[in-house]
Length: 448
Image (cartoon, rainbow, N blue to C red; front, top):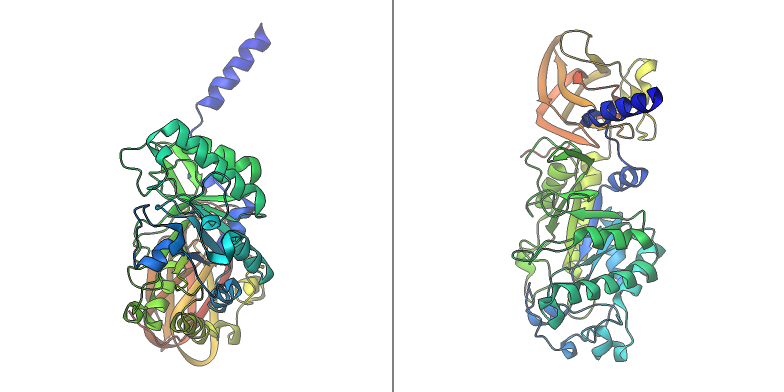
């Protein structure tokens, strides 16, 4: 009896322990996903041929008939921008499937494209992998075409069967994009949907809005602006349930347009706009997901391809010369200055009032001009830095140029250009042992 009482006491004590965000860590799949930093979501379907953004499910399959589909060109364009993974919209809200699903005739198999024998999911997944990119899918829960949608039980069975096809026939899925559009007035059984996905794709990362699905692996930033407007913490609290859910910030390459539209060149974002989006998403610890749209011939427009390459070239120009590599630093902090994100410097615990803040300093051999700093926290053991500052030494005096809370995967702090003899990063507070992969400085010449 005494052993039983002891066991009950232990269970009660364990149950009373509150989960602490400090203890929540990412999975290896989440770490690898965050390291890719940029992805693309591909929109192509009947809307492409009807000058629409949202189809109503009435378009005839015959309208889908691209004559020059070149998925290698799509992937090469994405890769040229530094994108590491692509997510294909396999079925949008109009219900038209880009693969020959056995669940419905409303798909490419009923279109004239390739005599009804085409499979866009197969083509894109093969092209992505052959070019070294990861692949994922988007399958809209909303369906404005299928009559079963009015019957939740019948439609859920249909949707799960379609999901099973995608999850079992196209190789490893890095990401499954779960959209909430059309969910007003309809309660989807997301628990069952994701349980079904996990049967075939246990390592796929599920993207969803925090309010949409409690147990997803990735979360929406909240807007399509290409900007993170908040201090970015990777752990989110859903009514007492804590989970590592990094942010993905989706935004289209063309302002407000996810699908291709004719004579739409004026909406193509400028290089400066794209760089700003990079700095305000990737540079704030989030993933930048660019929306790319092939045209009605089946190719990415030349202007879009060129813009993606120009964007990459501009990023390389701004972040291609890490000035910290040319400075001097102590040997015990060298891992933070070596330009290799696979190494890291482990800082002592810093907390207000009891331990001297950890500090990284690089001295320049001559006054050096720069306007931004890039800091990367190693997140394998959790996100721990909760306050930091960046200071520069000018004429023998230290002056603060940046002060914030979260660093996370990558933080880009941009400030007015300075000419300094040294720069230092001070970790003012941390919730545990902080690990820094990199501290870099650049002269980008771009201000916002």
